[in-house]
Amino acid sequence: MDSIDVVVIGGGQSGLAAGYFLRRSGLSYVILDAEAAPGGAWQHAWESLHLFSPAGWSSIPGWPMPVSRAPYPAKTEVINYLARYEDKYALPVLRPVWVQRISRSGDQLLVEADDGRQWQARAVISATGTWRHPYRPAFDGLNTFAGMQLHSAYYRTPEPFAGLRVAIIGGGNSGAQILAEVSKVAQAIWITQQEPAFLGDDVDGRVLFERATEKWRAQQEGREPNLPQGGFGDIVMVPPVVDARQRGVLASIRPPARFTPTGMQRPDGSERPIDAVIWCTGFRPALSYLEGLGLVNAHGQINVDDSKVRSVAEPLVWLLGYGDWNGTASATLIGVTRYAREAVRQISDYLRSSASSTP
Ligand code: FAD
Image (cartoon, rainbow, N blue to C red; front, side, top):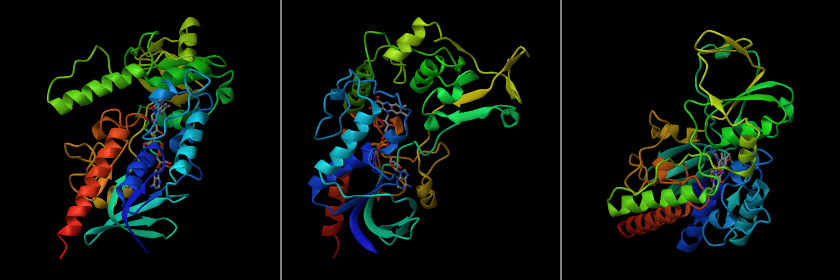
């Protein structure tokens, strides 16, 4: 069995950002990743996906993402960037390795992969993202619906929906972008809990990062954030979404009362036939392998301390990249850096102090 200072679980952008700081820390470490190739969840995104911010706002620490020919980099550019990034810094990524369990072993953690490999770690950074845990809300009658269903996690192109009556459910960026392209080949309706909130046409995802930074600064300074109206999930008016609005398809309706075998029933009892549903209803943290430690709470999250990166109940576990509960904008390329830096700083301090106090 290998014994090591730090095991990072997950080799997407969050795991690589942790690797960047670990490399400079002098600690021994390895990054275990379940994918067959670099790029984390970006490899699974739909074919036409582009970032909602320019490359300069989409970099992880150290080497910036190369400037794209398009205003907003395509997903393939992100995958190439992450692949070259791990080569450039010679990050020790092992793949494919699926970690299925972590347990306490004295003052260390035992990390077990499904192929029998094991690592004894003094600290673990969990950076497994959310893609492997798609979320779909419950609806009355859904189990009777006989049409096609697909979560955005597995959506690739609009072609399989050509000519169908498709309900796209979910009011975030994924819902808006998938509606934009499916509506070109299908009779698409967009279903959202409430009226979606859109950013202005003259701004892009940078505005969301500026809001996140202001929120983070305000937290550090113990003051109320000075934020404009609107949330962090407002829809960015990327060109396909602008085009959908120009075609008059960017309008949403509220959820049905229930599903039927052939479609949906509206609250007034009338029926709407539907052939397919695309669930753009988000993700939850992929933390199943930590369940044995009893860390995952009723919300599917882990209670973290004020730094947002360290588990309260298991102080040998740090977490990175799961979203706001784990650090404002931590689930974005540019946003994960400050939390990766902080996690590695804490781990270095902790391991040094625990080594010096060992007789
Ligand atoms: P992931 O990329 O999911 O990487 C986690 C890795 O851990 C994966 O390789 C996974 O296979 C592996 N793993 C999981 N479980 C295990 C296990 N048990 N054992 C071993 N390995 C495991 N962010 C931006 O900054 N700009 C954008 O424009 C943007 N657009 C987005 C558009 C969409 C549609 C989505 C869904 C997200 C977008 N994001 C964007 C958010 C974010 O950048 C991505 O979600 C990103 O993939 C998160 O990186 P990560 O490293 O935290 O997780």
